[in-house]
Length: 501
Image (cartoon, rainbow, N blue to C red):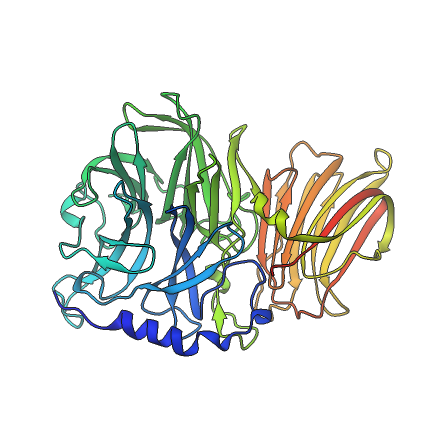
């Protein structure tokens, strides 16, 4: 097979120009690309005791281009170290792009990457259509070699009626009990809508189709991208389980407020029959910017999730001259409770807290600001309640604020409705509607945890039962935080600055 020097070119480019971006012009503690463009997280895994994260990457410009794999690693999921570009589109089986995939550590301590190659059916770019195939690479945590026998899975391994054009984003995991590897791949079925295909392999080289694990059936969007799957309670034959997908072309209805969005299906997994028993479907994240989530099992037993913190709807909007575009969410600890996916920032973030400010029993009526409560790199928890039942119609927090900008989270106590509005955040061309979350129990108190990092906000509501994630391109000088109440509300605040040294 033909091979080019695309990887060497990308690494040389990183080496030559990688220092152009000053740390203060990046997020402080959210992963952003070495340079250029980033989208989906890939290969989120633990390898030789360190966390590794790859990502869809085009180093040469801040726009989507032929997909490479960028690479970082971390000891604690907060501070990331850039490593050389891991893969470039340089073989016949991935000439049109090294698309999304996942990774595991093999028993002989190699790092196995399984990814989607986009290839021309005849190898001649100008003659034939593109198809998608699944490929493998092996490496040592820095350098990776593509398997000469790629692809390891192509259209020949598809069940009848499945799409070879939309056949991508393999998620692999080890099954220690069966001593094998499973892989979940997204495709489209005979009805033209998304489905998830489960495969099994002993080595990662040859794959056997097992079953269609789940299917869209024309209800939740069209193509389901970037599947992820995990179970809890490992001793059970029917453990709690979750499937994460990013649907394309969703209808905007109820809690699904993005055309290219995210959802989680929770239920039970019948291990013996490889059957997922769906119980609930809901959004993973209720904000504007969350896509292509991946999870990993941490060595201490936690399930950790990360996602691309961007929405395709506004991915072409540029508000500044930064030499990078696209960032990842803060990694989150996730668990299944009451049929929902609960999320919290990884606890490692707490090591970087400093300058604590605590205020208790603050009565809010009208609009107020508070000494010591401001900033754009912070971890702040606000607990708010009505002074007396019926005393307060609504409560709002405006952050990243100055006279011309703010992003606003508002809660209507009477309706149980949370609204997040970033129309004043600085997105000149962003006409996306405010995001709304209906809390059916209409709680009379809320716990709101804000993680702000220069260009973004992640808001965890009532212990992570809901999360709102948003890019905010507001000028960095806008650091005020305002608290507002229609009536009388009482709040307690615990606020820390986040400093990464």
